[in-house]
Image 1 (cartoon, rainbow, N blue to C red):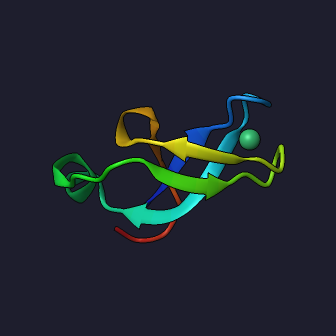
Image 2 (cartoon, rainbow, N blue to C red; image 1 turned 90 degrees about the vertical axis):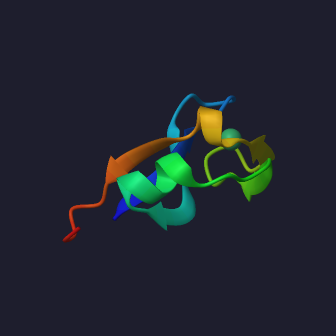
Length: 61
Ligand SMILES: [Zn+2]
């Protein structure tokens, strides 16, 4: 599994969205804009799949 991350538009730092996908599932899934409370700047960011990127979490799979 990998962590779904976005980049905070205020601080330009990666934020973990709280979602985990394997790479194949992430490619095939569809979802609309999701709100995320950002721990870096304290604001809520709407994000979409196109903005997201996956980071391996170091676990198996
Ligand atoms: Zn932010």
